[in-house]
Image 1 (tube, protein in one colour):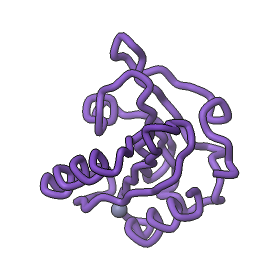
Image 2 (cartoon, helix red, strand yellow):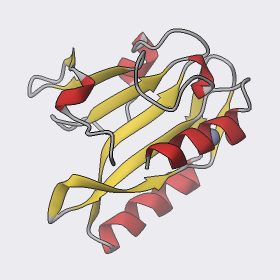
Image 3 (cartoon, rainbow, N blue to C red):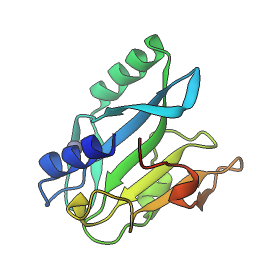
Image 4 (cartoon, helix red, strand yellow):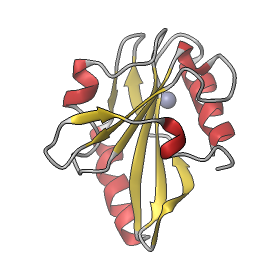
Length: 139
Ligand SMILES: [Zn+2]
């Protein structure tokens, strides 16, 4: 999962643009992340937007397969943090939805050393969480 994620970021973002993927699990085993999905998106150095058609197809596809999205993961050019836009436009607004940001367009080590993880709280706000509390890196 982690190798695949970094591979998408590097080939799609090419060190020049942001890129985003989703980490999915099966609804019966929500904690086991089993699939990486790379959306069709537009991207610049400072932002990205997912294609509407891709999103609608994605929702029906994962519903049919009883999958759910647990994380969105995206890159930033330099430091990893959650911008106001990131806060305002996550893929979904469910409590427990997680957003991971990878610094340096994912050109650094294939690890989460300087990454930033935040989670939607029951009141709808975002709260930073320790990566080791939500991800075990053998996934
Ligand atoms: Zn991409």
